[in-house]
Image (cartoon, rainbow, N blue to C red; front, side):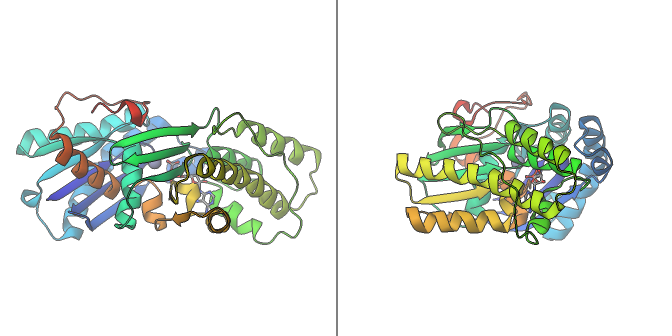
Length: 329
Ligand code: KG4
Ligand code: ZN
């Protein structure tokens, strides 16, 4: 089947075309306007989505070398994400479906991230863990079987990327700050020591680390920026690695998939691989284009869900929050 995938869950507009598990096009248009504000402004995200969806869809069809008539299924993210942003992509997809009579599938964005790992590593089979670590999410899930998930832990406050971005903003690094922090950290010889978060169970917490970094920066204005960057990364990533290794011990899984913008970080990937060699798990890390938000993963998850459950109803609504365990699209 040939699937058109659409994702507008946050600040990137993405449209993709998938032929079974082959990516024919996977376009992402980032809105530079958010850089000016040091974070995502939901209203601007929605406006940009509504302007970009049509031309990006035409471009995706063009890149894929197919016409609209060749499509079999249209899949769009229904949530979780920013409500106004989600409504743009979901309504656009519904409009295409109404006008063409094509099949329709609403997709849970988190399930999309799981399918990103599958697109990147077709041999990946459950059971596996997936660590989704981005500006909006920090979650550890257990994919017990296809369509059977259990959430092991999630952030109690800030997401990991959000905390990195906020400290980066204080350091004048612009938005998003993750890539600049990674580059700076490479130059550090003496990373600052910051407290390692340690909430109960397998949950995550990043607001304490963000505040500790802020207090350190205010109290020590002469500290080289690369040492702050490296210290922040060490503490932020140690927390992720701690949760992953605890989950591996608890569940005896041997595979860990990565997703989300922070998971692009090479230092994090290396640290996880070292932990994997010690604990006996293998790390499946998609390319950066499949780690960050993209519509190919939505097309892939849409196709899998369509094969399992058929079409979604056209009155399906967007949702800002839900757990995959309560999947009801
Ligand atoms: O998945 P993503 O593109 O968008 C969502 O948040 O949904 O993730 C963006 C986040 C930002 O917080 C950004 O600073 C972080 O990922 N990020 C990184 C790196 N590249 C992006 N964090 C650390 N190291 C990186 N190389
Ligand atoms: Zn995402």
